[in-house]
Length: 344
Ligand code: NDP
Ligand code: GDP
Image (cartoon, rainbow, N blue to C red; front, side):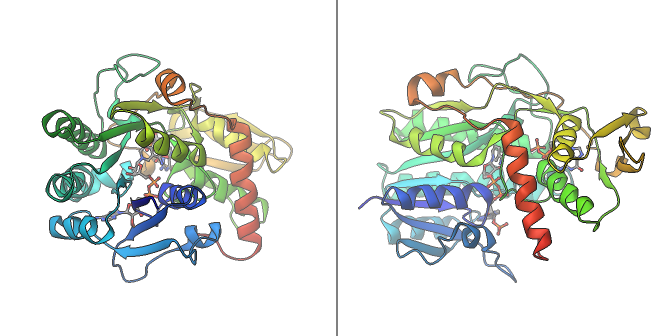
């Protein structure tokens, strides 16, 4: 039986990937951190928390000896490293913690693989944030990097260490450069889910105004469930490599807000510019969206658009869900949760 470790099972991608691997017949060791209140709402929402082949293991990515024990005790042959301090905004406030977890953390796993079993296949969750300041569009595996946040810099270190272990020790270390991917399981600190949850609350009369930062930023947003399939395909390939997963479509944050309100039959009219910009209900004239500069970042990634041609050619991977479908799916999930009186 195939055995896989998924670090960060309490996160969006960890939950979807665990679900996929269980469907494929794997035994899955999903790692979570010891915190005051562990949150398993995502795997509960997917209904896999009691699956007989899912084992939840306490683990911290920053600890080398735990990483060694994790590999020794599970005898897994595939490791998907999804654990990270993954929020760009927080990385500006906690650059050193971000470096320790997101940058150095993966090296604990690479070292553990080198020590315990160099045959183990390793997936590193790299990110389009490594491209940062626009050097070239669309962005591909060959685009130069120019990260614009402590998160992007930390991820770039882990990305190069994965390549370095591949080249130095022949370890099957693959790096997936994934563009933003969203879902109803996305954390509420990220802009899409903040928007869909707030739109649901506004529709239900539980919130007056949605406050956002830079609405001109453009992102290439895909559906997370499809992206975890790409991760799995990367580890089934003949050789380790680096792949971009993206949709090749980019839209502004403002466009996503407009789509989300449309999903609850509210048409927005935009007025003003910069910090004065507002989104109004086109019918009633009520202000529903405002800019709050507290959500601006010290340095911004203005434009991301990826070209997934290599993944398409070599892995047969293809994004399928449109941004309109994705946004509607997220708004509907948040309407349902808010109607039931809870929202994670
Ligand atoms: P989430 O923030 O939802 O999940 C991150 C996970 O990492 C959580 O389970 C978290 O646990 C865990 N974690 C954090 N610190 C540690 C630690 N020290 N030891 C062990 N586990 C830890 O992220 P996503 O699921 O969205 O993303 C998965 C990965 O892909 C991340 O590495 C992210 O940076 C990367 N990525 C994501 C993209 C996206 O658009 N979603 C795009 C490109 C890359 P806890 O619940 O305890 O905090
Ligand atoms: P990121 O691409 O990993 O940084 O994903 P996010 O979802 O956190 O942010 C996407 C873009 O939305 C960035 O350019 C942010 O500056 C922008 N943005 C605008 N307002 C907000 C907000 O209120 N919260 C977040 N998280 N991002 C915002």
